Each structure stands twice: as C-alpha cells, then as structure tokens.
Image (tube, rainbow, N blue to C red; front, top):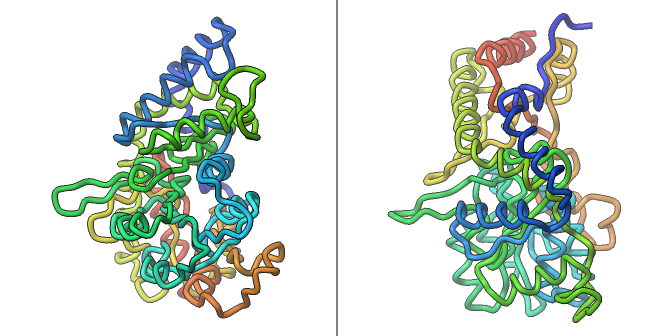
Length: 378
C-alpha cells in the first residue's frame, strides 16, 4: 500500500473552504420547509442568467435531463438528425436517441479535443434539426463561427456546457460565454463539476422566450397550471437545498476556476522541466479561449502501463473516454465502424486525465510529474 495518495479530485478539501456558508444556506432551507421550485431555485436561476448574460435560465434535475429537455423544447423527434461529437460523455448522444432522433457524429480537433466545426457543415442533410457542440473538459468550441450559418439554415444549436460553466472566449472586442451563444445551453451540476452541487442538478439556458416558456412547462410534466397539461413533459426539478448550495459555490467559482488554470500552467511547466515533451502532450488552449480545466487531459505514450505505474505509486488518474460513442454497442445500429473517426479513436487510446482541482498543491503536481519521468526512464 502506497504511503501517500493523490486523488484525481478531492471534494473534501473544497468543502472545508465553504463549510460554514454551506451549512447556513442549507439550514435556511430546512427552516423554510420549502423544498421544490422555491425562492432558492428562482434566485439561482437569476444569478446564472446574469453571470452568462442570457435572459433565461431554467433549472432541472440533471445535466442529462437538460439535454433531453432542450431537444424536447425544439420538438426534435423521429426522422430527425442531430450532429455531435463521438468523443464525449454518453449523455451527449443518448439524449438524441431518447427523443427518437438519430445521432450523426463528426471527428474532433486533435489538439483541443473539441468537435471539428468544418465537418459539421459538411454533415448537414435535409434531416438535420440540431447540432450539439460539446465544450469538452472546460474549453469552448468556436461556436460563434458556426451559429450564424446554422441559424440561416434553420438548424438549432444546443451547447453542451456540462463541463464548461464559466469558460469563455474572446474574439476581437467581444466575449462569448459557454452556454450563451446558441439557442439553448445545457449545464450539469454533478458534484465533480467546477460548479458542482452536493447531488444531481442541471440547467438549460436560452436566449429565446418561446423556448424558455416551453422548458418551464416540460420540466413539470408539461403543465403550466397544476393538473392541466398542454403537452407530455417529464419530472425534472432542481431541489431547493441544491440550489442553495449552488448559490454559495457560484460566488467562489471564478476564484476556483483561476486556481485550476494556475495548476494547468504548472503542469505544462513541469513537463518541460522534466523533459517529457516527447512522451506527454498537454491539451492545447485555443487562441482567445479561457479554458477552465474541468479535466486536465494529456496524450501520452504507453498510456495503460503509465496509469498502472502511477496507481502503484499512489497517484490516481482517469481515462476520459476509453471507447468513443460511435463504437458503443448500444449504437451499433447507426452503422459506424472503427476507423470512421480516426482522431477521436486515437485520443481514446492515448488520453489520461491527471488530478486537477482548486486545492491541488504544487508539491503534489511535482510528485506526479517526477513519477511520470521515472516511468519513461525505464
């Protein structure tokens, strides 16, 4: 058993920083005995809307539900196609099949790991109803380049912002925020996210009044008045306690994201200091982007053996993602095969997520990188 350990994420360290604020917020809800869609949820929705600069933010039960609700609000269904990336969490594609539509995949950029937007335009057919760009690992896709063309063709953009709340990009004198560019933005507040709840939670943002109105109905069984239903929705509501927790954590998010960025810069420096440029390729931060490093994913040689060695040293790492979505057994009926998306498939064989969180210590990072150097020396 290793004498010391380094986890990929340490939520306890983060909780120690906000313990008193969190307990006060939860106690306030408990005293109110108001648990569903109450004042804390409304206040949190307003705060997120202000943060992102959008008119509408509609809380729901999870990031997965956010994606499903977004497609339901757009009335995407059987016979429709939705273009997205094969290199993402499962929910990105499962939400498409959940509403009866067909996922259409495009390959990724090997440096940023985000979808290749040039291939998106090449993949549009008369059946295309929406595009879901994923701001993967905390870095934005240049969606401002894609959105005008989609809008001109009557195709909706649903931003998957599950991993990128707080990420932005600057083009000229304009700042674009993840989740605030397309028709709809979908956010996850899963506990491991940069802005994480202490349970499940999600949100859909929108710039359009009609979509926001539909989302508010869809999250409560399609009802705008109790026991009267205009359509068939789902039950997907954010709890008051989680909203209260998220309001506390939102106040600290910018500081925590900056600490993640500092940790990422330190990794890049250490790779150079230990001469690992040939063995380890850090993620590329695209020009204009502010990457918030939800995950710090490198490409590395002999990945599986390296991961096993680090684990033996007490250092935990993760693989995001070991099997691309187009090769998942449940999507075999889509007709994709190995080799269809070579960049995504290569990344799935080489990627390794190193520990990253706001409280990560410099000496822990040096221990990790020195251990990587030791592995590659043998």
